[in-house]
Image 1 (cartoon, helix red, strand yellow):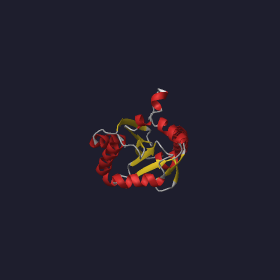
Image 2 (cartoon, rainbow, N blue to C red):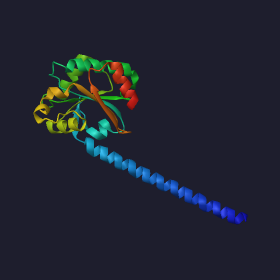
Image 3 (spheres, rainbow, N blue to C red):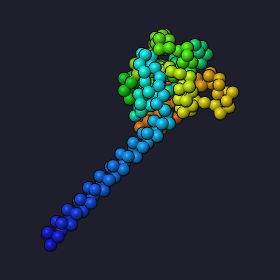
Image 4 (cartoon, rainbow, N blue to C red):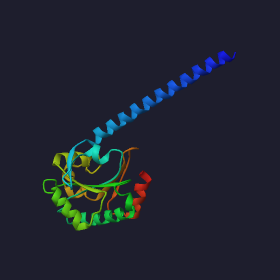
Amino acid sequence: MNAKRSTLLTLLASAATSAVSATTVAWEAERRSADTFRGHYFTNASFVDHTGRHVKFYDNIIQDKVVVVNMMYTACTSVCPSNTANLLNVQRALGNRMGRDVHMVSLSLLPELDSPSALRAYMQRYGVGPGWTFLTGTRGNTDIVRRRLGFYDSDPAADADLFRHTGMVSIGNDKIDRWCMMPALTAADQIVRSIEEIA
């Protein structure tokens, strides 16, 4: 009787181990599939950051991170300075979480004018601290990424007006695929709350 029970328990344990192993393999495959999908969706378009480093948008900027993304260009004198000032308040409120738990990203809508050195000068002018990356690239890659992030208008004529894309901020957590958008001039504490809800 004990031998039969021992054999049965061994078989059950083996079956349970196999089931757990199969579930783990299936979960890993599903996670890889989701990562691949998000990588394709956001694209791995090439950009250059403010330090001159070449980066891939999904692999280096978005993947597995909580990000706060806005569109800007250094020659913008209307809403961009106010947006940057407000996001600086968000950066200060986040403190040492910046660059560790939360990453801010500003993407130039005029990459042909905004070189890495122009972006650095802009950052210095506004006192931008660590954990905030400014990107420039080609107009084609910029357009793809901004549209994938939700910075677009369904009317082509309106979409061509770059100024229309500078007033919003996109907040996302790639690990759990949660995203939201809000006006970039939303009170800094409300933006921080939205980041914390998504993070």
